[in-house]
Amino acid sequence: MEILVCVKKVPDPAENEIVVRRDGSDIDRDDLVYSVNEWDNYAVEEAIQLVEEHGGSVTVVSVGDEESDEIIRRELAMGADAGKLLDDEAFHYSDGRGVAAILAHAARQAKYDLILTGAQAEDAAAQVGGMLAAMLDVPYASLVVRVRVLDQGKLEIAREIDGGNLEINQIDLPCALSIQTGINEPRYVGIRGIRKTASVQVPVLGAAELGLVPATVGRAGAKVRKLDYFVPELGQGAEILQGSREEIADQLIARLKGRGVIQ
Amino acid sequence: MAPQVFVYVAHRDGQAADSALELLSAARVLSPDGLVIAMATGWGAELDQVCREMTGRCPEVWKLAHEALAYPNAEAIRKCLSGVLPSGAVLLLAHDTLGMDLGPGLSIKLDSPFVSDVVAMDPPADGALKLVREEYGGQVSTHLSCDISGGAVLSIRSGSFPASEETAAGEVRDKSSDIGDLSCGRRFIKIVEAEAGDVDITKEEILVSVGRGIEDEDNIEIAEDLAKALGGVVSCSRPIVDAKWLEKPRQVGTSGKTVKPKVYLALGISGSFQHLGGLKGNPFIVAVNKNPKAPIFQVADVGVVDDLLEFVPLLTERIDNQ
Image (cartoon, rainbow over all chains, first blue to last red; front, side, top):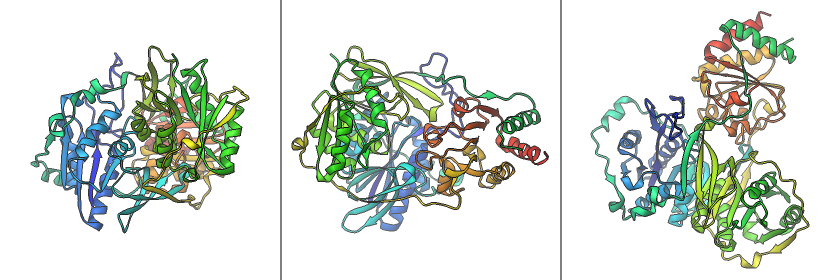
């Protein structure tokens, strides 16, 4: 099975406190720690496991800046066979549709049986996978938490729906799936593994190499544009307890007693 | 001119989802005085029932009946809607597991822009719409502009708009004959219900819930000790289940259980809307989090800004010593 996995470099939510810049133009990106989008990492693991069991190869592709080759190399260290970075000035400020269009051009450069994306990234838009599938005119399923290969070019997949229930579907190959976290346990990649891929040259493809009309993507092609960032004001919020750790604990115990939680 | 706004009504067992009335409110922002058309896809008596229900709310309800739509398979619904929606239509749908499956691809087939998980918007001006979304699990919000002059697909977050109180004496327009070929490469097989688990967190009055901030599987014990001291049980947010530190039946949230405790202690939980979506019944919420900007502090009653690994053992010890 030839599998394409779309990945994205994002600020690591576990490592960063996200702060809006004073002028609201962006989040403060000084000193941010970046990593591969968590959902994408599950998608890469799933692809690697499918290839380990059924043969084929895994190609990782990312629309990103020149530093995104780090995360591609990380996924290569995990076990992906090849990586491509899609980078061009014309791609900057693409909306979801623009990103999907760039990926669709990359996907058409080879014959893939399966295309995986993460279910969402840091902006929680959860849009690129479904758009990509529609552009390529292949069947799509979102929020996938189980993939089983059936014979005759079909998969059985489970989608996670409300209440943790599973919706079981059959889907024809080639198809695109968006992968939900928890589908597997992504393997650990150590420093040594990443070092081994340090010398790998990740090919960089721009609009010309992809046969893309630059004006259809990036800022020029975007019908959805981000105007600014701000911190939402949602009512008065919690009463934040003050004092030493011991004092705070005792205040909290008093509150819980008031609620009858502690006798 | 205001765009023609459509609302896609999800339904189950012959009843419109709660989201339908919220979508109608959102539609009113887009089209303050214009006609808003509700549309429902399905098959048989259940679809008829939903369409009738919606005529009490909307002057015009489009019924789209087809055997292939009996189960809401997004692949078939996408084909159906892209065939029947007029060009320039603005379609609103719920940002739920069906909307996420349906919306992005539909926007491509309609050649319309797409904005997902919208929490607020201003009335359109000059063919552009200004919307609000959240990023980074609700830590920051963004304003976006969307060119809706050629139509749009917008998915709306549950609870962001009030349920519409408008009433109507509408009628059903059967548009089923406009439906084209719905054959698609994905077939619904069955629903597998979530497993029950050893405890039923939906029935507990005191939940000590852990999130990413617990950092390590071995630290779950800290929460268990506190739960024991308080006579409650341990629940969790999604990352803990993903990491296989606790079983799925312990997960609170839209993709887990909906709980209604009296007291909810959120330890190291940032408070994403998916998590909070599983918390009902207006519990007394205590949040412990290192990050003073965590969204959980916006909804909590009492907050402790501290490392839970330090604070919680001390709290447990002091409760035990009472």
